[in-house]
Image 1: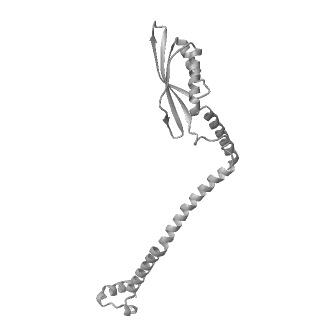
Image 2 (image 1 turned 45 degrees about the horizontal axis):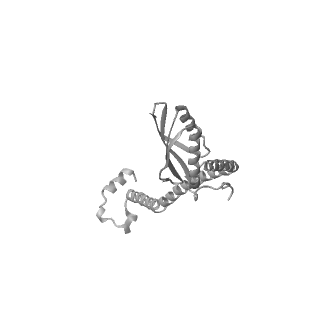
Image 3 (image 1 turned 180 degrees about the vertical axis):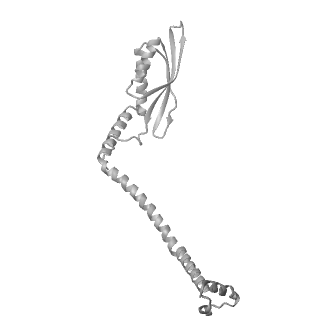
Length: 212
């Protein structure tokens, strides 16, 4: 039977009278269309209920695989450079310990002020005042500010500042004010100095960078 005659039969079908029980007697073109529709429906249902979840699982596993590969590469690099990293950590620990030794403890701050007073006297400066301010707690250290006011000649003041900066304990100098007094040959230096002490419970101990 030609396609034209099959198409004519399909157009003459009374759709309301179709009965699935008599599907074998339907026109061949209608049967073919129904088979194609059934195949598409079955394929869509299988794709929705079976293939789609599996595809999502596959994509998730592929993403996890990429993540694990990156972690593996990172750890492989760390393992290959473990000895070098240990040496770097030991060097950093040594530097940290050196820096901590330059920070005075709470009990050493008065001795630091005495060193500053001695430096002023060594350079023939008159000490007008050295006053501690209230300490300022930080996360890992305590900032201890104090005001310094001395009088003397310009070159003596400059040598005094150089001496304070070279002290074995860390002292930073801020807010300088230099004004002439008396006959004009004498200058008054006012400044804010800060030293820093570490919290005893957070300071790393010597040798703390060894293997656990």
